[in-house]
Length: 281
Image 1 (cartoon, rainbow, N blue to C red):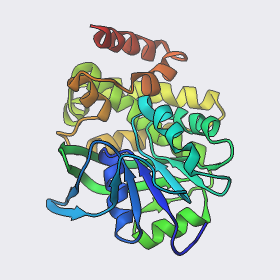
Image 2: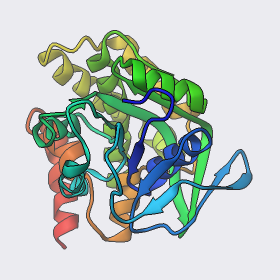
Image 3: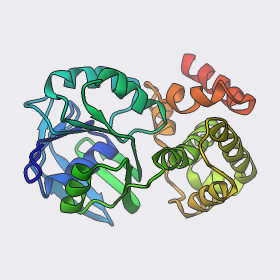
Image 4: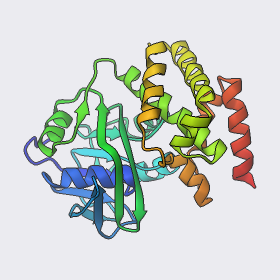
């Protein structure tokens, strides 16, 4: 890797991919690989600004860093298209919801350095070429890597590289799976869940903690309390990405976010069955 001028690709032009590519493009030449954008505007703090990554439908060169920000249901397809453009020194970072994408990428890229990662952000495509960020911006959580650290520092991206990365990823999964389940099940925004389904939300959090502990991940009561507070602080009219996918009537992340938990929890199995029936209708 060339530390001062790394070749970077961001795969996926949705809310996460658009945001990350925009911020990285201020410091680096970045390829944003997507077939759904031609320009990139970011609305953040009420201010709209255009950013200039290289927007391309196909990879163009070998990459030092590839950041995946696609939906889980197209991850395998998009990742396989990147295979010719990475090698043993390339760093792969997934910023998807859930805990399964990392395992998928390890299988697809056995020769590369796949790192565990997640991102805290509320960002959606609100127009064909526009990503709107709500709340306080974004925080990337990633496995320790000196090259990623240098890139994020230079670009001014907020990040953490905690010593217990599995716990950090499950903490994100804890919140996103519970909110995705209830916002989609009740067709409700964050504020409605916080007001009308608070007890059920807490029960789902406790169930995920139980599952995590069964996989030797050290989650506990304090993580439930943190997620409860995060729900209260979230923009009340925001919706989860899975909820938006259901509303659009297209593919969803049901399998990635809820299907895994449904195999280990009767409570999640019931929600999964209900939502699966809606998908099949």
